Length: 302
Length: 262
Ligand SMILES: Nc1ncnc2c1ncn2[C@@H]1O[C@H](COP(=O)(O)OP(=O)(O)OP(=O)(O)O)[C@@H](O)[C@H]1O
Ligand SMILES: [Mg+2]
Image (cartoon, rainbow over all chains, first blue to last red; front, side):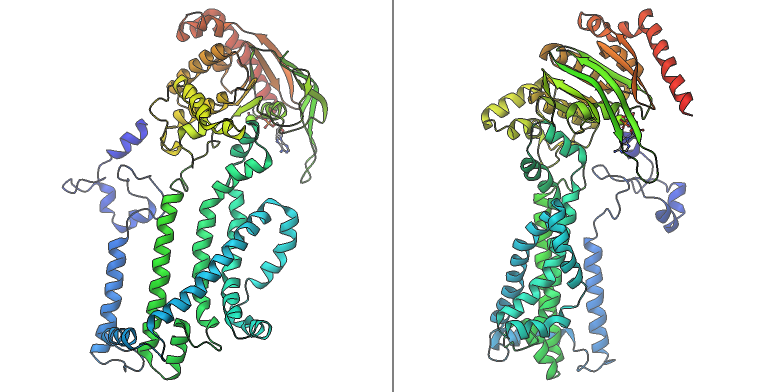
């Protein structure tokens, strides 16, 4: 207790009017060797602690400005990089008139349904299987080799197989995305099972818990942070695979839109589609982070 | 009746080219009702192994452990364990942590919270029922751990260095608290510590263990905790000539062991 109190009164912790202490004058170099004292409520030395919101906003603004500058000054042809304005105009155009006789909303809806359908399926199958792999050497022995075998293969490589086996309908598309989400979700859940401290497990047993209760009340809750992280990583893979899944015999969807626009050298539609995919994925990631803060506020705290 | 350990030995099998470790050799120990048994000894002499044996996490290589005449076959709610740390569940608030054992045993919610509330009050945690445990200080977390074990109403309370992570002042307060609770609840306690003073102050029986093979080298019957409970102050008890004499004697035994090891 007293240790923390003294930490907060270290000179240079906050007051901007105070003369700079010796170690602050050493400048950037001292930041590399030693962390600054924290503000009350933070924990000293937590890696990467601090708010990066404004910096991120600045970074985005700078990239857009650079983009605009390059096109405005005519350094690259619009065929390669259209101006930000052209992208917005294209967005408004597709929003109003659709793309290849399909409305924009429908493109978005179809792709989102494919990705989230596959994602939900991967969670429903992958999380229990991953947990079972963590809990039982038998299950691990059986499922570890196939998962580890297919995991590093790029989805594009087995896309032809999917099509030969499952045809050109929705099944092969959703299955392709499913496979790319499944591995990270299952493996994350599997390693999450190891998160519970052995003392927590022993304590539960010594209060009369059964094996099932230990799993339900100790192992699963402590695996939750890692499972949520695995879900975030998994859906990222899902969006990555979307374009591949919509490469063959699709007539709708954002991936299809990007691919067919590229064949007609409609660069502005390509970039617009990419930005839309990124925006949806990012929005979902923000949602997941919010859920994480609500569901596992204790993550990393004990 | 209470708990009886008969000729229990534990041998950890050889691993990584190291020979087998005889962690406990033919231990005899009785922990009667109302006993407060303290285990003391150099690091690695088998104290935690003995506790794991009583808790039922480990089965003896030979010998047996009997609780009220029945052989101990595994962990159970009649022997609740308090660990040094890391054993609370951070996703539950204080009252749910304390009521955790009752929940496992299937108690009704209302009865559970009533019981938990009683022990929360007993350990001076009133007003923190709904705090998340990860926001409590180390001393408070440890009290939650003790309250949680007590709510299970075990016959024996097993504590592995429960106060080892606390500062000196909090530690002395916790010692007094545990003694009061012990005398009020009439539990038997098996308590591991590295502090000779703590051992002498709290125990009714003291076992001093020696390593290689782990065994009980000395036994003492103690009455300092009774003096404290009878009304003397803790400082008074710890400053008495009898206490100091015994402390030096025990320290000498332990230092001798440590020197043998070095
Ligand atoms: N799982 C294990 N496998 C092999 N040897 C072990 C194992 N656990 C403990 N030992 C050995 O058994 C002996 C007793 O260990 P134990 O943990 O019971 O000691 P301790 O008295 O609790 O020590 P400390 O005071 O440091 O906690 C030690 O020599 C240790 O190396
Ligand atoms: Mg130990």
